[in-house]
Amino acid sequence: MTEEFDIKTLNIVDFFYLILFIRLKSTGEITEGTLECSKCKKQTEFEFNLEEAIKIKNKEEVSKTVHVNKELSLRLIPSNIRTLIAKKDLDVIDIVSSSIDAVIYNKKIFKDFSEEELQENILNVLTKKDFDIISKGLEKLAKLYIAFDYICIHCGEINKYETDDILNFQ
Image 1 (cartoon, rainbow, N blue to C red):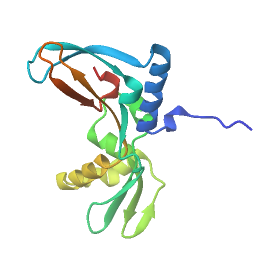
Image 2: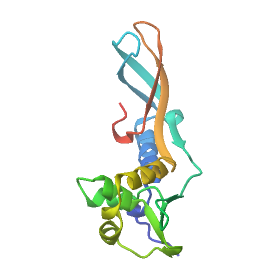
Image 3: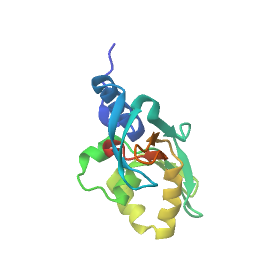
Image 4: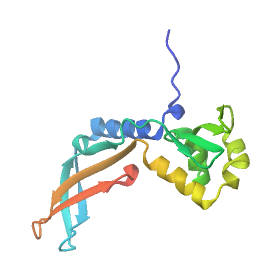
């Protein structure tokens, strides 16, 4: 029996990992470009192996429960692709709501809610301090990034480059 696969259910880390490996296989492992040297500030050419440069921070953190206040906790997961596809202009509320897997309110767990219900009944009444707590929790989840070193052709400085902007990493 073959199960249907819906790419929209992939979380953002898995989706971008998949996209990068499709790129790897279609264009090759070696990526070239130019970046500014941190020492001499001149543009310098670089070359690196994309397969070796793909990294995952907090690989084991597939969910994180944050305690927002005495009554409210949220179980966070990496956003899924459905949210990125559905809306052109994402805001913080959209990203946070797509990252909430469960709401724990007064020790009761709620999992059956839409993003709209979540935004209207919980997220729209939270304070900036509450969102800071949630943001710190999201930062601890698994995250894909690219990191490599390159040597400036002008001054010989070894530069470190790192980005989590996977779609525009050059």
